[in-house]
Each structure stands twice: as C-alpha cells, then as structure tokens.
Length: 435
Image 1: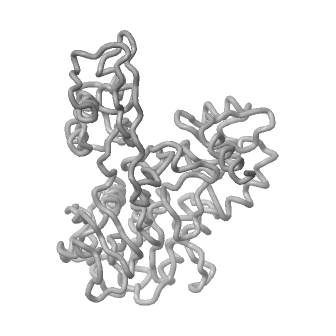
Image 2 (image 1 turned 180 degrees about the vertical axis):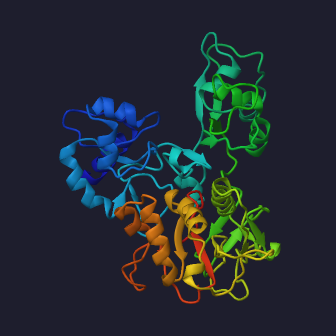
Image 3 (image 1 turned 30 degrees about the vertical axis):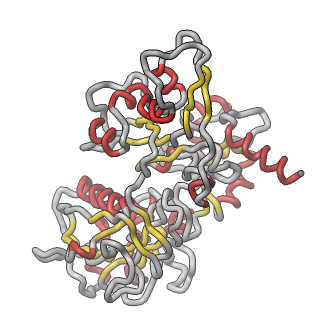
C-alpha cells in the first residue's frame, strides 16, 4: 500500500509544472522554461544559477535539475559528481532518459532528433511486453462538434476516426453519437534542421500536412526556419533504425549508411552502416569542424558496422551500429586523408581534433572514445585553455589520472595509436540496445 502511494506521488510530481517556492532549492525544468524566467521566479540572477549548476551557456533541458537557491548549491554539487542534470553520466549511460522522479509511462512523448525536449522516451509497457493494446477511448458528440475538431482534440486524424468507426460519415455527426477514438497516438517533437521541409516531415511520419498544421497553431505554410519545433502525433517509429544487444554480441536493424561529407573519406561503404543517430551525430561533429576551420582537412573513416550488424571481420565490437573507427587529425595529411598510421604526439592537429570530440562530449552523444593516452595530454591542456572546467575535464577525459583510471569518456585502450574509436550511446528510442 505504501509503495503504491509512493509511486503515485512520484507520478504527480513529474506531471506538476515547475515552480519556485520560498523553500524550493532544486527544481526540474519543464517545457517552456528559460533561465531568465526561472531566475526571476527564484529571485536570483541568471549568472548565479549558471555558476551553481556549472552551466557554460543558457541552454537547459526538460527534465534537468537546477539549483535555484544558494543553500542547496553545496549539497547539490556532491550529487553532481554522480548524477548531473538528472542523468547518470558514468559511462555507459542512457541518453535521453527521464530525470529521476519522473515516469516514462505518464506521457507518451518521444523526441525526434532533439532528446533534450523529451519528457518520456518509450511508447508504453504494452509495446515492450507484446501485450494486447488497451481499448481506445470513446467520445460522445456535443452540439457544435465537427469531426475535424474531435480529431484535433484527441490527437488523432480523421482517417483513423473513420477507420475505427465503420459507417461513420464526416459530414453527418450528431449530438449524443458515440465515436470510438481509438488508442491515442504518441506525441513526437520534431526539430527542423537545415534542408528539412514540412512536406518531407509529413511524409517521414505518415501524417498529412493539413493535420500537421492543425496540431501546430500558427505554423506557416512555407517551410519555417531551422530550429523550429513541430508537434506530431504518429505511430511511425521516431528512428527507422534500431541497435539491438551490446556492441560485441548485437545486431542492427534498418541500418543507415553514412553519407558522404567533405570532411572525411569512407574506406568501405558496405561497412559504414550505423543507427540513424550514429550517422547523424558523426555528420554533426564534422559539420562543427567544417564551420570553424576554413581550410579543409580530411580524415578517414574505416568501419562502423555491416548493413545488418553482427560480427564484423577484424573487429570484436562494431556489431550494432554504434562504433566507428576514425583516423586522427594530423599536422600533415595526404590527398587521401589523414592515414591510419602511428605518429608523434607533436603532430596531432589538436585544434581540429578537440573540436570534433567536444561536439560529441557536450551533446552527451559518446559513451566511450578510445584514444591513446599520450595524445590525451595534449587534448586535455588544449581543452583547459579553451575554457573547459575541471569538472567537465574530469568527466570527459581520463588524463591525468593514469591510463588505468576507469573514469572519463575519453580513455586509453591498447592499439589506438593510429586511430580513435568512438562508441556512441544507446539511442533513447532503442529499448533493446545494451551498453
């Protein structure tokens, strides 16, 4: 009885909007929150909140825990060594997991591309356990109702309402009529990126542009700017791919081949398949390098996974689309890219190399990055000069604690003198993925 009551209280706490009382010391960020509004409600400055929470910028995530009162800063800092922003950062961790004290079943919301906007990361227990889906809700038509309005209110489409109610005519509904709404669709928050179009998004998630406009009041008929969040209700999986099992005993479903990029050369396209997230995160990091450095320098990407994953020749891992071998940026690289050759630490192009790594580290996308220990020293000193805090460096890089120190995303592993090995985190929507 007490256990049931405790779970119910946690669920209610997760659904409550964020607020700052006189006694509040830590809050959980909710949708629509910003540092400025949180600081105003708490009666403190934005800079104080950033200092207490070791924030580099103004970006915060839904589900993130923030210290908003000075008295809690010291006690909260101890907890941050194990769990920062509500996520256990000790590799391996679950990227996009809900913050402690929230329930992933309470809101069937999934984030597409932007896990920071996700409150929940799974459909339901019925999906996981192969149970029969629960019976859909019913609605009694009220005076003035239209089928379009009913569909909009219940996060579904006219097509699904017609399919769930044989004989129903959209132009002839009457007050008192009972309509089967069907099982609710999960909500997806899609963040537009450069090159996306509304038509492509509608096609990708099997919804009509008209329904998408209804769900997003004020959405322009023209393609909105990159960065715009679009709310969808769809049964289509957020990601077409799925990493299954661990990296050394796993497989890959619906693998996505890494596309070409001016920043790298792929040795074998047949061995360059990964999850949709892996390929997108690789592209994102190389875009970051490309945007910072005018002079182009090319590295080589050797292997990610086979199209369907599984055992890959010459590798013990690389089985579920989350591993990639990439040559280091070097001071001198030939026309075929920076080669997989051992080189002196003084020849490392540390500026480009850190830009690539920092993108993955700051976005929480890398579970582990194997880099020879002699190269970690240069990366550590460069990152420190560029403003990385001691807490960040301790979390990110094994150096200077020794090559056998178990902590640090960037860590030493034998036979990585000529290339780095990045292992990306399990995509938050891949429930059968194992670290």
